[in-house]
Image 1 (cartoon, rainbow, N blue to C red):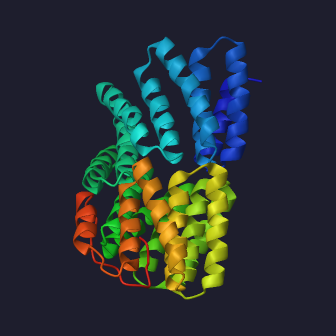
Image 2 (cartoon, rainbow, N blue to C red; image 1 turned 30 degrees about the vertical axis):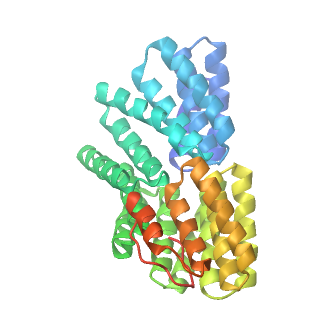
Length: 362
């Protein structure tokens, strides 16, 4: 079969968020390109394969596809192809719980895109850098990169790029306690994704809107929004994004006082994170179960959960999550050192109010 036709069909499927179907078509195209000795086509197909695997939460396999694309791009002396391949590799590393290891790949991709004056690619990698700095707990850098990505996307008339930059700003604002800003950013993004019929973007923004409602105590609205995100993620087959929605739903059950259901839902989220080997998601679940144990008066269990979470978060460079673990441990202490907790939060730009129980992790 004609590889160009297979590739075009794969691109249409990917843009429609039909990642499983696109993956099969990209793989077929890669096989034909390789047999015909077409390294350009093979490289593009490998990037497409990596993108689909990453969106489906299969990060180890995605890295292998991107690594092949890196080798082909270097042989072809193609800086834009190399930038795209390295950005994908970095995002896959980050998703596996290695945000600090991901930064050099994303930074190199950014330099290559700037040198090539490829504004759309640069906007994408700025968004990727922003979300990685957010994971590392450097919210000031995260917001700066998201705003730069937003400017580039708007200049290019890139509606999806604008939407993802707005989502990035929404997530960073939530961690800083700016919940009204969070809701505004996600609403603007959601409107763009709805107009573009971007299924993944709609799921992403509905989950963000649900979290904004959750942080403002509107749990009924939050659950309605999470249900929409859940349906869309199921349609896409995105286990990774879906897992965070399940985690958020478990948090709502906790805040509503339905502790047995919360525990069951946290367990479900933990299983999903294990499936995708998402270390950050595992930390989130451990934080949630620590909060749940605290609310149920099971202080030894909570102490163990928060202590292990702090150790793991510091090991992997998740400074914001480490701050939340320190807060949980302080709530268990008879004489909490709130000054030390406050200083830890300030170092990564987190809004700080000693959160009394019941806890509601942003």
